[in-house]
Length: 109
Image (cartoon, rainbow, N blue to C red):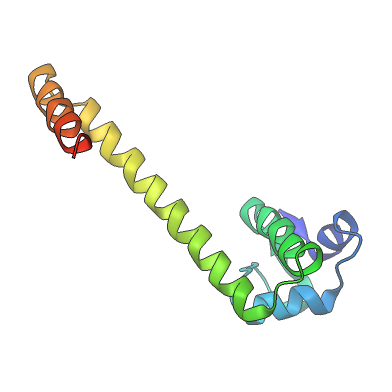
């Protein structure tokens, strides 16, 4: 768990105002109250991305929200694909081979 002070120390250009705005917009989801927020690893990584999108690239809040939404969707899809892959891996060899054949056929279209 990372405190707000730790987060600000790691990201030299960030201020409490940045973090409060991102929390208010739902882009960061810390635990605790505003005076004692703690951030999970995912929020720390997301803070890096938010700082880059707003600072380095100069994107406005609405665009940043759209980018973060798309990143979240990709993350969700990757998790679902991983789950499907593990489910297929647990099937009998004949089933896996049949699925592979269909995927190859569909991929040729």
